[in-house]
Image (cartoon, rainbow, N blue to C red; front, side, top):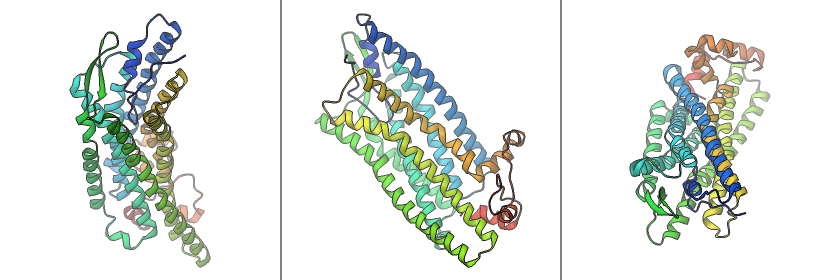
Length: 376
């Protein structure tokens, strides 16, 4: 059985979901029941993602701005949380209505804003992840030399440039998305892309360009950086063991490794969660024989949901892997942190215990404060 399928797609949204809804009739009860299921299930699931993602990222932003140290990594984490928050709040609620309502009801202005912000926030996320990785690369591979330019002011400038580039790169989608009236067979209003001639070339070029700039190129840079980072960490660890470095220096190396693990985890989650929707969209756009079946429609919905979920998981990564976030959270919500066992230990305690403590503090000693301020 064939299912009406989207001919228009974006990295995280199925624009012709409206077409699906408008084509369901009671003449085929099986298809009608299936689209009704999506009309109920998708808004509920995406509503849950919106709640979790907005609350989690708002918590990260508040906690780190109020109590976090002013260092490069924290500014990048805040910037990433802002882009995730904007995506989950501006994009997801509006697109979820496409499954429940057969028409775009929010007008031409919101059509342009919503589709524009999909690409703005996606580019901002990718560029921020790339900047975080390059920052880790400089901090570890060029530890001493990079201290001259790895400053809070430099990271703020980079964050500003990230958003500026994201807004500029995404302008074509604000220009060429608009509301259109379609007779199929009744009159419906959709929020669709309307590329100039040759339409097919622009359509295919847009999806290739998006996947290249938001996935292929950033991950290529990230893989290169982490190859060098892992090599340097391995050499440094071997030297510290053989030369008998002080325990405080070894604790510094452990902190550096933990921050790197946090960034790696965020990047891996992004790569995994966004891969399915990029594959589906490329296949749909470039292959005229794409199987437009019930099963593939379900796969596409799942891939969209997975890409949306990526904006919800980063706060949990910070809670498990970021000493700085746990320390700031403990200051913001001491009673709750105690209930959640977000305890801390000093750098000296960690050094004495060989780094095997349950959680870390890094706030009491002068050495510990220096480690936090230098953001190694």
